Image 1: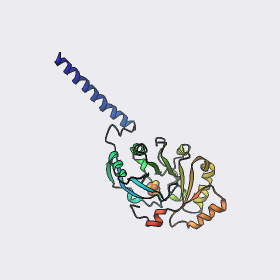
Image 2: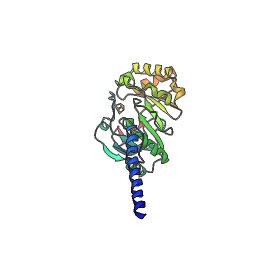
Image 3: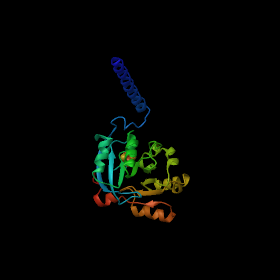
Image 4: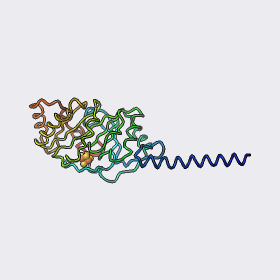
Length: 252
Ligand code: SF4
């Protein structure tokens, strides 16, 4: 009788292991976040503590998690060093490194963070850990699966960026009060284009904030400020604080 019980136990253990293995494979190939089931990981360029340089939380001490890689090539990109390389870290390790700074705010950025599938899982884990979480994204990747607690800071790429064709307009209905839309303006044509899109998609009422930034070295900040005032636009003009303070050195 004991022999039968032991065989029966072995049979059920075998069944459980078979189901677990195949379920993981199925969920993984369906794009399901399975961080808790496997040791999910991400390629990371850097994790650092600084002041938020832009958007609604500008000036607040924040931990930045910069993911490696981006499928876009904007002419004004200031984070090309994040295109390649990076260190593969498990999601648990990323959370442990973030926790060392005891932050209130965490910003997941890139590169294009959403180009790595497990980014969605990381965002959820950061929210679950109680941080105020923001996501800086080019707007070229699907955002449906982003945790609703995350504040999305989504670019709309202007013609002057060289990547206007990558805008994923289907993301716009996903924006809410906690989210922000950012235009980096390279010239007057970009400004006119952004003004048109602001109207066309009623962005000021759809998102919590619309941000207009001058592209560094391409349009004078004061010029953009005057255009906004002349048209009385419902947008927030912004300069990148980290560039003023640290001249855009990596790690700030
Ligand atoms: S989307 Fe961002 S990281 Fe990617 S090329 Fe454009 S500016 Fe650089």
